[in-house]
Image (cartoon, rainbow, N blue to C red; front, side):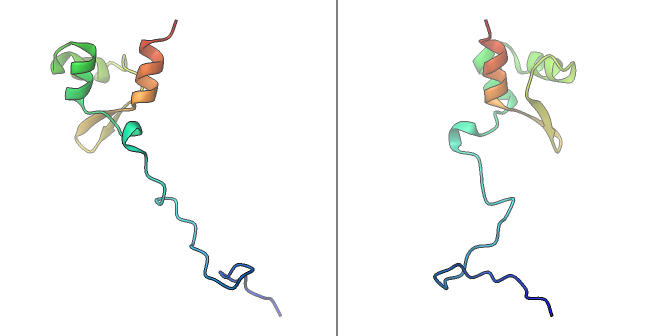
Length: 81
């Protein structure tokens, strides 16, 4: 006879199930849009699109039909010494 693990903790209250979607990025860690990256780099949006397609911008990823950029990877590459 096997015993199924309980979702109750040692105090008897229900513990939430682990969920991979539970943790969301903070507002500071949110992905940047092409317009935001263009303003940050002081270039046109077309230049950002061109650089993303050529894989010249780190942290660039496609989300559906649009580009998004990871600000941490972008900052690390732009301000690396």
